[in-house]
View (cartoon, helix red, strand yellow):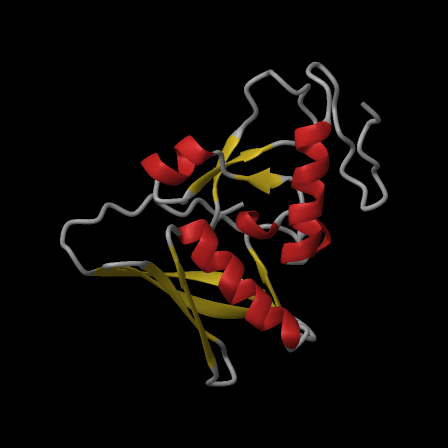
Length: 160
């Protein structure tokens, strides 16, 4: 797995670029341009020359907007921020502009989970839709302390 460096922003309106893999009918590289201004925005340039842009209060929100648009065309970005069990806390969203998020599966709730950069690469088998990711996160929130929520799409929230 390739390590994508954390971006350090220096100005009021700064742009950085990095490459991730877009899943079309095959895995193809896509270039992401990250911008910080009044909002956080992501411009995704795909190999076919098309582009998709999303913006939000932080990079995770902007990434979700981009992902929703790409999903309409059957495309997905193969990055950690699109994994079922990756979701940022409110503190991470504030301190890292949504660039860092917890890997919530496989660790008992209440223990500190691993942290990833949302733009790190992810396997096609780990990436889900924005809706699937959100539903899994809601299930994780309902999981009692000390228990582990399984990663499968059919994992049910524990009863209260």
